[in-house]
Length: 85
Length: 223
Image (cartoon, rainbow over all chains, first blue to last red; front, side, top):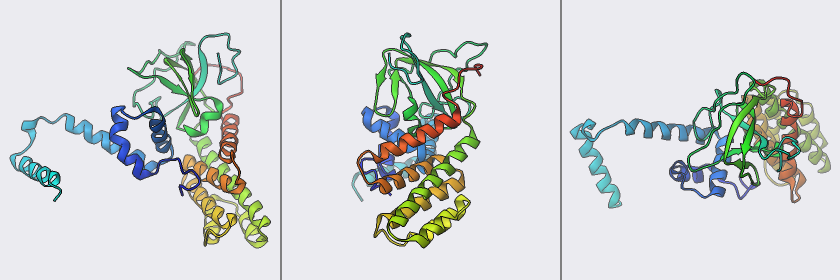
């Protein structure tokens, strides 16, 4: 249902922009479009809420809080991700 | 100095409107705005490295939320396409005419407007039976069912439009007034089909909100 407002962002755009949105790194026009999307879209609003909650939770973690097995799994996942496999 | 609420401009500050989440929470910043009290405005808010954004009456449909407040913005003021910004701002009074009931009614009113526009278009297309079916609906859920049944293709403006009417009615039935308003405005754009159609729909919505929230009424008491 975006053809009526072709200049508007769709949910996929907003999700991709959320990190920059939270960092305050978007230009004013794009930030305004993200905010206006969030006003009416409960799905993206919930996604942003979970995103913020995750960041808040992980900020409280120290490196030593991570069990060795979880650390190895994460490092393994990152290695494969970086190699595109 | 331009004013959102009809000030003469004698003051250097600007009065405007601001939507907040329940409990005076800033929708995007997450901070809580200080409340007015004892006849005095709330404390000034000055976001670090940023500005305070608020609405003229015409901007209201873009920023709807649970609470509506009158705010004072401090210069320098910037006038943007769908909002205004000041160096800092403070709450003056809550507009108690805007609440959950008003938001729900707003969604229903928008869905009904979309329905009425669709009826006109369908009549213009010679589909009087479909127009009557839409016109006879009495609740958002009934409107949704009828409109959804008519939205079989997008061959004409009428058939395209009833899909948006169905979306608006469903959202209104769910109590999602903001989403209902968005789909209703989209329906209005299809019904109109000319440049400036979206602005005219937003203007209709802004007038509805201003009237329901009593924005033109004089101040009786600060909340």
